[in-house]
Length: 82
Image (cartoon, rainbow, N blue to C red; front, side, top):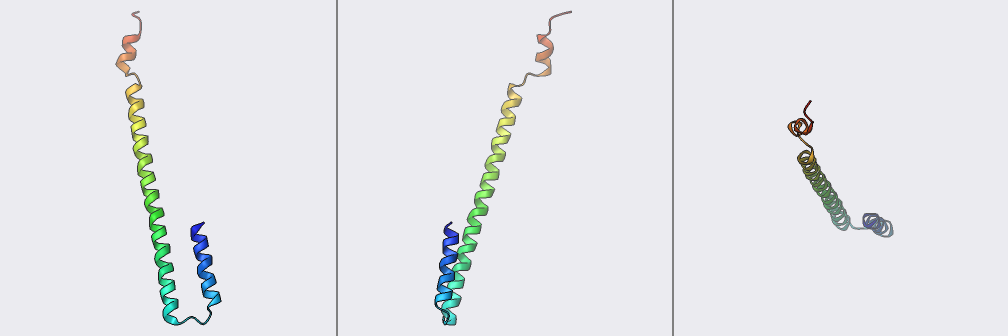
């Protein structure tokens, strides 16, 4: 929602100041571009960290399940003699 507010704010600046000087327009668009790039970078980093965390949790869970599961030899030893 902050990004939407920021974009609306920038639009207001552009529409209210139609006769902006070229330098000011370039500076504002540069700041807007860097802001979008930084936000996109932060979002991508969070997604990558989330995927890595999820993968490590999944691997740990599979390892725990493998440790808990009885082996074939244990199952054969548990059978009563014929």
